[in-house]
Amino acid sequence: MTFECQPHRYATARSRMALFTSLLTGRAQEWAAALYNKKSQACNDYDVFVAELRRAFVSPSGEIST
Image (cartoon, rainbow, N blue to C red):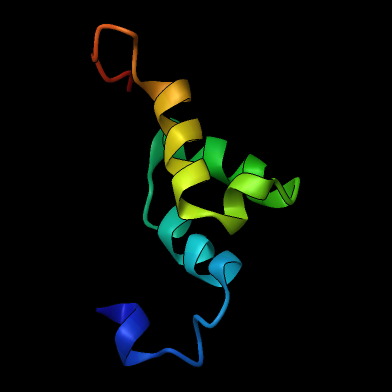
C-alpha cells in the first residue's frame, strides 16, 4: 500500500527494498543493511532478495533462524 500511495517516492526497486529492509529487526536487519551498503544486486530485485534472505535464515528443513 505504501508503494501505491507514494509511487514517486518509491519509484525504483532499490528505494522499495530500502523501505523493506528498514522494517526488519535484529540479525535480519543487520544482514540486509550490509547487502544494501555493498550495493548488492539483491537490493535491486525483490525475488533475489527473498532468495538470499531464505538462504541466510531458513534451514534446509524449513526452520527459521532468529
